[in-house]
Length: 189
Image 1 (tube, rainbow, N blue to C red):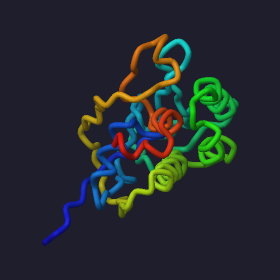
Image 2: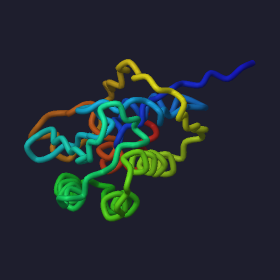
Image 3: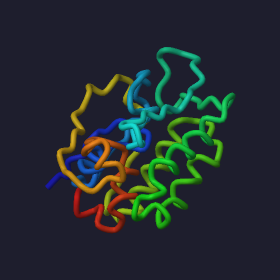
């Protein structure tokens, strides 16, 4: 019997829904050749801040409008990485499992990756390691189109740091679930 391979975009610290779909796949193909789309979760992710949803965006060097995600470079002309990590610390330092998992994610914001794809792949590999997924990922540099939008909504509720202030905020970055639920995160997926 032939194994089905699902093609996925390369998101930056993907949503709980994305990771939930990924966890159900024995084999996934990450599309590095896909044309980069601005203002998508390929270079953005959302966390739960004290004032509600907080969008964190990785600044990019824009050279070509037809560049593949594998060619897009990160812009370090501002200290975005330091600001992003401080935002994550502010949002999650009171989360029950922040101190147990922060050291896995902090290097994503201290190491200076040249390409967005390098940062995103490293982030997904960290998540797979923490959640102990058994998944085979292949990288596809041949696909040259744009993947049609996929629905990665997640309706599962779990404890969040600012839930009493903001209510439950669905579809946040997987950081939210890991820092709030720790080892039981896999059960929610």
